[in-house]
Structure formats: C-alpha cells, structure tokens
Length: 339
Image 1 (tube, rainbow, N blue to C red):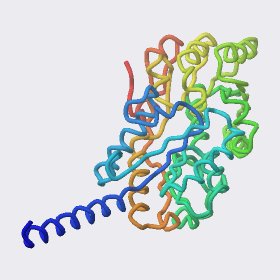
Image 2: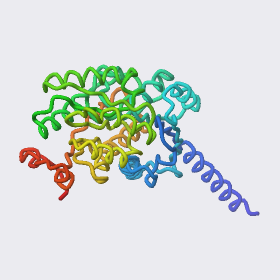
Image 3: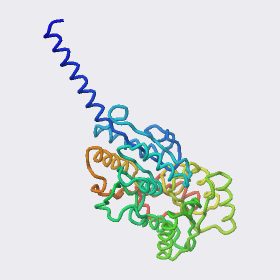
Image 4: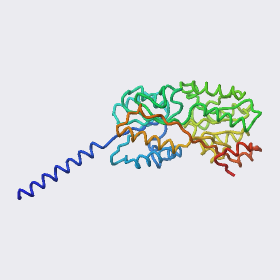
C-alpha cells in the first residue's frame, strides 16, 4: 500500500470513529411514567383515545424539534398499572436507570418521582401544582420539576356551575369519582375545592364513590342513588373511569338527570355535556419542556404552563331525550353543539 493511501485510510477511519462518538454522545434517554394503563398506549397509535390525543402531538412536536425516537432519542415507558401504593417502588426503579428526563403523568406519579430524586429533571402533567405541593411558584418552579397544568381546582367549580345553569332549581349535585382518589391525599385537597364551590352555588354535594372500576361496581353505585337521585351529576375526569364511559353514560341516562363529563368521548357515547381542556396543546408544551432540558435548560427555570384552552361540548339529542331545554346563554358559549 502506498503511504498516501495509508494516510487517507487512517484519516477516514478516524473521521468515522469521531462521527460515531458524536452520534453516541447525542443519544438521550427519557422515561415516561403513567399511573395506570398499558405502556403500549404511550404512543401515537395506542388503543386509548385520551392517550392518542395527548401523545400524538407530544411525539410530533419532539420530532419537529429534532428529538426522534430510534435515532437520537431512546424512550422508556412505565406504568403503575393502577396500583397507587406501588408508585413509590416504580419511581425508585425509574430513577435507578438514570434517564436524562422523566415525564410524570398525574400528580401522584410526579410526587412519587420527586420523592425518589432531587436531581433528575421531571416534566409533569397534572393539576394545580401549588395546591398539591409540587412547587411554590409557577413562574419559577425551582428544584428539578417543571411541566404543564391542565387546570387549577377552580375548574371543578366550573363543572358545578354549568350543572346549576342547566338545572337552576338543583339543590343536590352528584359527583362520580373513584373512592381511593376521593379519600386519598389528592382527594382531600379536591374535596375542599368542591365543598367551597358547592357552598358558593348553594348546593349540597353528593359523592358517588366507585370502589373499583368494574361494571358491577358502577351498577351498585347507581342502584344506591336510584331511590333519591341527585338533581344533576358530574363525572370526574380521573382516567380510571374512562374505560367504562359507555356504561356510565347508559346508567346516567336511566336516572333521567342531566350530567356533565370530563371528556368529549362521553358525549360521543351519548352523554349530554363535556367540559375539557385541549390535550394536544399540553402534549406540545410537554415536548417543548423535554427539548429545552435535553439542550441544557434547568427545569426549575422553565415556567409551568397553565392550560388556557377549554371546550364546552353539548349534545342536543341527549337534551331532547331528557325533555330538557338548554339555556340559550350556555348554547351561545358552547364550542361545539351536536345536533
């Protein structure tokens, strides 16, 4: 081999190794942790429609920003599988793998992960970060956490207010929610917000607590209220209830009272009304936070984004079935009216 050819070969080999080293250095890992459900649903094509509405914009925005799974980004997916008591162990497992960023879905998940690490950056999605003790300042979160807030707890007061507009004479408003959430630390804070909102409206709140997310348990809860049903019912946006949405709508229809739900899919299943935030907007904001942190930003310096886009969806066919005339003022405020 001539000396010139040998030299060129060495240079090419060195350049190749340098390029491979750079590509290796650029490979980052994020962990996404959900409290329940299948890890396969943490994707753009999962079976969970709520997940798709959140994760499709999330992954699209990451790609737009140059963070591509399978190229320069590795994503590890974890689920608590609905066992709230196991979140602490799951959090420690995730932290032990030392990802560059942890995406924590829901307040309990974020609290468990924050208890396990004070250094790994956390991007959180949940509700009312200050009231639940995640941060003390939205503009300057400090520490190792930032993220997006779906709403503060006044959002639930809006639920009750809408029900009161539909049934001005209502004195008792039901609220369907998992018992473990209502009676847990999260629920204690939520209960106070609900009671304050109910007092302002001059109504009594009737908790309708589901022990476990099974069809027989939902039927039991509705059988209990059948002799004296509330004047209207609100259905929590807690994800545990979502898989049984069609049964919930059916059972509420049998009570013959108006109801409001946390997601539009309930209305698509025949429910009367839904009031929800824009999940796509939150997914994109989460991706922006992840990208900033991967490129050197400190999570405590990134302001927590507060949801600003909410939609009221009304199903006039369901109103007609109830013999209900929807207030014109409410119809005028609706973002979507299904004829």
